[in-house]
Image 1 (cartoon, rainbow, N blue to C red):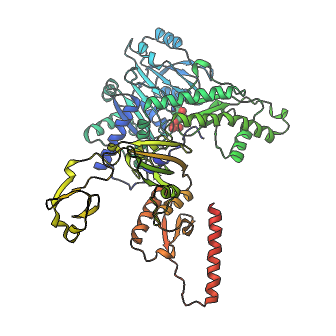
Image 2 (cartoon, protein in one colour):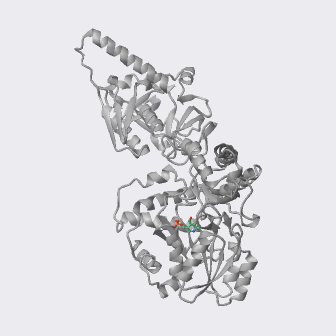
Image 3 (cartoon, helix red, strand yellow):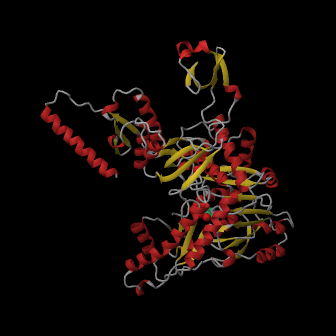
Length: 634
Ligand code: PLP
């Protein structure tokens, strides 16, 4: 729950697991162009975007060194650690800063900014930290600043490091010239990529007045991109893959939905925590919707609180820094949502008799609204991301006829006369978004959550396809050879390696329908979402249960560090396709448990010449082991 780097979805982590590419290759061009275009969408700009291989400070510094020259006048609100750093950077670049200082938890008002513009007609730029992460305050008049900067065409620059992607930002519409963020915050990507967007007029200014710097020299980035879609220096390639996937997730969720989610959740957390006495730290008109600061409960000491939280609840939060060191702890919940608590503990330790007891009690109280938040988040977000492994039970039928044709439940198979003793009736393993089931079902599962029982209708376009009259053919009966005498209407037959159903026989000809049996039909799935698989062990178990055609209690594996040993059950030593089974299993396991380095398939052959007595005791041992394993599984 650290307030950045925020939790990174597995799907984003997995995107990095690719071979290294040449950063002067077509592969890179495809990757980087995608990152740039998607960044522009998230920032809502048609200007330039550069995805710097740097932390957020790098992008903020680039906004300074490429624009500010010695003697430039800059207006900047200062109310915490990050705005102080930014004003320091501006001064180091030679600017004269007009600081609009307010106490932590408060923002300079729009009127104060306007007054500063009124009094400084020669101002070169307005810089601001949109979301002051150290105190949980957010400037909420970004859309109005253009009225001031447009008076003398001064530049408008936004450090959006902890908020872009979680709150509304319309760079072009709001007349923002430069905006930045860091991927490890509300984008929920790993740290190391920090985008900066720059509009046309600012780009022109930078090119005409290039900075005396190499790595953050933006004109150089523009030139390389224009000429070859490359970056001037070696970029953090794996991080760009992760970054792109994070962008995909943001755009799939939709910016509006994502912003709404953050607003709902922060609202719930503010009000939920207020009811138990944790009042918001920021003044009402300055409160952030992505970083929440609360007045700490009286008597709760920062270090004890965080230690207890870590040891008893296995929850990590970060301490404060800058002026708030020891007074603030900052925390993030799930990906891209953070909140922090402002501690007011001076001198209170001595008044509390049992610190650990006190802390535990207070933590419990604190966590109640956290659970409330979790619940709200569950309700207003897409519940499963692509690549999430889930288990479902389902029964499928044709909508118009109610003909049940597929099920994962043995009792249902028997009831509808579908039962096949060779089939393993068990919950179906699905990797969301990867078409392990037909598209319509796959798409609908994204919006479910564990425990849901849903009826999902799948129309032909997302199911077995529309009927195609071109797939119904007449062929001479004699082409069926010996079968010509035996077939009748409704039979399924294979001709030219294709299976079809006989629709008509007569005049020495036979009409065969090669359409899928359910083409043109709407299918109804009754689905029960049973479980989301999270641990490596759960994932491995279910992949093996899916792939290995024996009773589940005969499947066993053991993980030693990064090596997985899978025992092949004796009864399938000689079956056809064992190699394929092993191949599919290892592909899936490596995919979903990427930390594994090796998989061994072990076939243990028992000496048949062993004395009967000995064999008997072996058998007994195996049996008792099996029983133990079954009991464990249950
Ligand atoms: N600006 C703001 C508003 C931030 O919140 C942060 C980091 O939390 C930074 C700048 C610096 O980012 P980084 O630590 O990635 O360099």
